[in-house]
Image 1: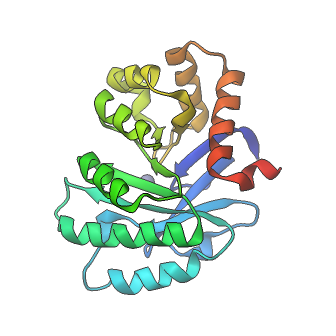
Image 2: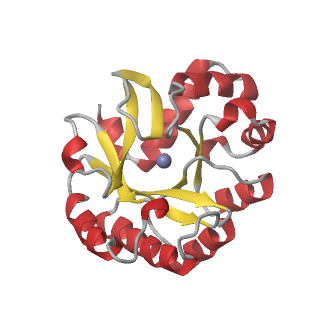
Length: 222
Ligand SMILES: [Zn+2]
């Protein structure tokens, strides 16, 4: 495994250290391989009032697995037709599971950052919350970091000068990188960050590893 690059959120099997998402119930714990790490959750896109509560029960059972080190992706998406109140209901269950199992939360958020902040204020979670594929503006980025959220950047960082500017301005102790559904390698995201931040690759590698170690103690044991 190429250890010096860390991919916090991917839907693919990766040659790098990665947190592969089990999009439940489309996928199951059957994809788990030895010595690899996973997150598992009900993605807001695939929620269905008929079945989601049943699958939450199942999720509860599979997330006890030690290879699943984070809960999610879960979250809120105001661009889809799934009722937002129902999305919230399912999101709360993931938060409770994350706190109960002491596993951090991986969050999908589209046009719902103020909801997420409000919910965070209400729950006062002990677990770290990671916004994957951050797409907000600088004010939102700073507001989230002020509350201790980690922000993860993916393929969009390659093209979006807005995101590049945000990455430049925010607290680097709360950033991560990911590939999500993209076929771009996580190494390419790291290389882009070296240019945006004007830092060398070794520095960025150490920084991201440190950030990850602050979230997942397990990965720093080897
Ligand atoms: Zn994803």
